[in-house]
Length: 155
Length: 286
Ligand SMILES: Cc1cc2nc3c(=O)[nH]c(=O)nc-3n(C[C@H](O)[C@H](O)[C@H](O)COP(=O)(O)OP(=O)(O)OC[C@H]3O[C@@H](n4cnc5c(N)ncnc54)[C@H](O)[C@@H]3O)c2cc1C
Ligand code: FES
Ligand code: FES
Image 1 (cartoon, each protein chain N blue to C red):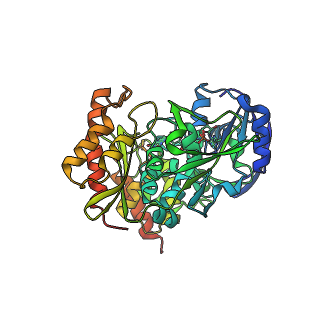
Image 2 (image 1 turned 180 degrees about the vertical axis):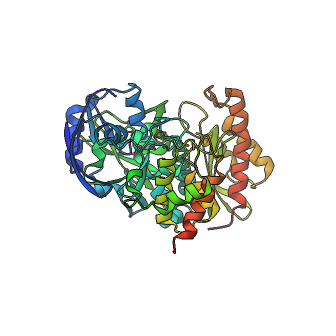
Image 3 (image 1 turned 90 degrees about the vertical axis):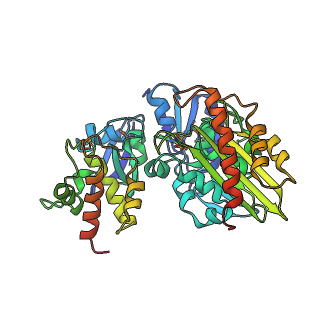
């Protein structure tokens, strides 16, 4: 058991976690932040993407103890009270999701992209988002959502 | 995942002490992209997992008699670093073709080489750059050339108490040009079906220096020394490249897997040796 000090979506969290806990399980089971999904469990699909100190990681391959001393951002922290984040609004506006399972991961990954490249080219979007699989949308709508959100944010 | 005790040393000395004490019962964890997958499937069941993330100096790169890359440097850092692009564009190019951005942000170069999957992209690139690895334990520090480091599938010369601390890329010969080709017939985020790294220097119309290394063609990445020798002093033309490809691939024993049969991979390896040599010798000079 280790005590993890972390800031999750802006809130300080101190929690005891078994050493062999995965970050995705810590978030979903212990903190009840079930927005983050686990799908492949092997780092391929991106459904479990969260930001650790601003950097996207597969929470299915990350030990919860790695969060000690770090900030974590998940989909639950995107909306500001009742106001959706521009990326969330763009995904709704452009039809960037259907079943929604991949969407929290898509949006967290896209947030990290726009922080690095506020006005990404289509190629940059494709290269960055390649590790976030979607069985429903056929990807074009996801790319359009990110472009639309980027156009809305003044760089 | 089986229970283990997580330990987080603050210094290299402390990490080496822990490894010396727990050796066989311990695994170090860097990015975790390989180890966590293995532990989730109970393929390795360490009693102690030693986290390296506090060893900040192993995340840095320094120029000192070559480029010294701390073992914890991520593949994403290598792919985007102007220093690496200047020293060894071949390594940057190989890193850029690993998996996806998110995995490259987590995965470290030290973790990749210690993992030693035969289909990794970085080992052939490191071999063709004449890289060597600094390996440390409480007992000693030693330097192992990349082409002597890998001993089998997921096996290396590392003893249980040893840590890779840095990857050293020497200054590359003047006038050399490079290419890394990853043959990906299925999806772009796949492991290589075969891969080829080439570094060639040409002067007065003759090859004066060549390095060729292949990935995913057997139990380890391999350097094609016979092909390198064959090219030396020859004109960089298609016929000589085909002879080199023949020499580089004749004795390979690729593994049969979902990406193809040994025979198919051997043929594809030969095709891609020629293409890598062509790409390297026609690339613009840096
Ligand atoms: C979805 C996915 C796709 C991938 N695709 C590719 C690909 O296309 N091409 C490619 O080349 N690779 C690919 N990989 C593999 C990836 O490159 C490796 O998993 C990664 O480089 C390992 O680094 P890590 O820091 O995560 O290592 P860890 O998982 O932390 O460690 C791996 C092993 O090395 C040991 N170790 C770690 N650091 C050290 C050290 N400094 N000294 C001694 N031992 C050490 C650990 O004990 C462990 O046994 C892929 C991985 C995933 C998850
Ligand atoms: S569930 Fe983590 S990457 Fe697929
Ligand atoms: S919306 Fe269903 S998987 Fe992407």
